[in-house]
Length: 316
Image 1: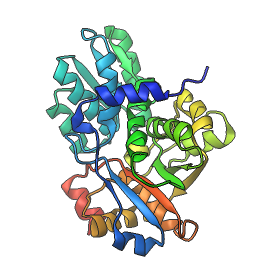
Image 2 (image 1 turned 180 degrees about the vertical axis):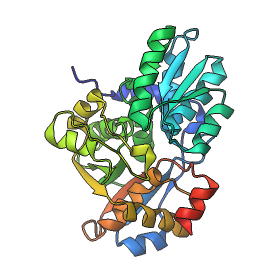
Image 3 (image 1 turned 90 degrees about the vertical axis):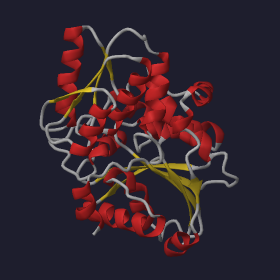
Image 4 (image 1 turned 30 degrees about the vertical axis):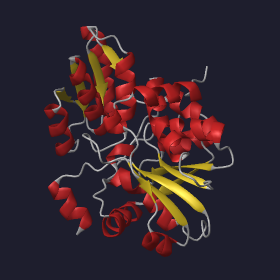
């Protein structure tokens, strides 16, 4: 059975989620529009305690959770920060599994928010397998981003906010990691603005979500070796892929060069320090600008957790 976020649940989540994660800035910039040749609404999900959109889904999920049972999850970094931040408010024990190659800044922040962080495996999906086993062993709840429907419902509040903007969108460019963001936004738009196209964005070096969506079955890849760690999915979440059949109109790939160019453009034009996965919307806008001439689009800058070394490497 396919589980989709509902409008009523998204709207209830909007009334419940910690306001620190809600009503993020959304605006257009004349100079950027002139460069692109179309109007782009820029939604900044980076101005909150965890510097990403993940707090919406994690706060909504934890508000519904058993307040006694310990929680375990796996994360490339941003989801884990959201889980740690929101669990700490309620005093719920939180353990996050991350890859041995995970972003050191994200690991440091998860620990700072009170999570126990365990490193396992060479990528996110290997860490997830260890996290699931560990949760079963200790009797904790294993929380899986995009499988647990609350994560998509929380992300759907971004769609609600975008549709408060007094324009009609031709398309929305949405990064695709495990799928919560695009399924939440897509579900809300399909109900409230069905003529708007929902375009998912993946890294060329991590195409499993695109391949799975195209072929309507789970396609795993051997690697997901992209700088965009937040969307580096090798083994898709089946529930998320099946939901995407109802929420997504199109998927496109971005190269590493596309993503790095967009990070620099976001810094130059918007004054943003975007992590690679947070910049893929701008990367798509820039790469496909000829296609979108004269249209009205929106995109979400979904994360800005970059270490000092990464800033030197990508923004110089």
